[in-house]
Amino acid sequence: MRVGFVGAGRMGKPMIARLVDAGHTVRTLARNADAHEVVAAVGATPVASATEAAHGAEVLIVCVFSDDQVREICLEGTLLTDLPAGALVVLHTTGSPETAVAVATAAAHRGIGVVDAPVSGGPHDIAAGTLTVFLGGSDSDSRLATEVLGAYGDPVLHVGGLGDGQRVKLVNNVLFAAQIGLVAEAVRLGTLLGLSEPALLAALPHASSGGNAVTRIAGRGSVDLFRATGGEFLRKDIAVAGAVADALGADLGLLETAIRTGLTPSTPVTPSS
Image (cartoon, rainbow, N blue to C red):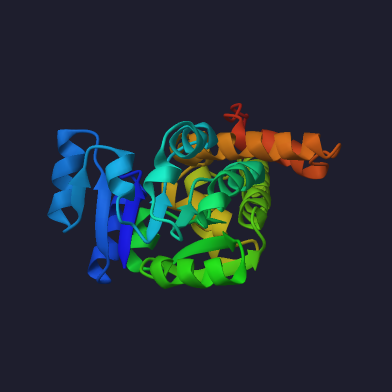
């Protein structure tokens, strides 16, 4: 399939490599010489603009950092008129469900479909072909998206209509941030009991307290080191989740306290003697 790709960054580069390996023809926006070289090295065609990436594409994948960037690329430029009529836009960026709706509304008059497809996992999951994708959109658009996203996504979960992929991802990240807070509090308790953080984190993943958050934090060696590497992405997504909840007149309830703990650097505690 002819695929356009915008966002050849930390997540985008391994996605592009997997798409090429799966037999797709990929045109990728590469803004600098380094990106140009990396894109070409995996067999994709580097181009200088989103317009060129969209040229002739049956599917256009957008994988940038923020909601504002998605709006800039899809709504403020000519991208949607540069795509062939009947193409499909896949939005990987985690953001507001309303952004996907706005893009779909702008694209509808040309018969261009839109799915929101935020992901859970990292570059290592992409390289292994095991990235989790939460797909929101019509049945027909979701089937077409799955044909392409299956190059690096497994499972690709069709969770509902347009915007529902974002809603599931926001809930996922809120829960994950809260779990980090619970792990941080457990480490604080362990320190008060005289345990070292590394020893405690090495043990907990193997017990009934284990889970994805504990395992990933243990892999970094401490809660603060984990916060330092993933905190920027989580804070962005939590802010979006909070804004969506506020718009509904709701709040995050008990999750909010745990999230605050999860994303705030630890205060040193004095261990028991």
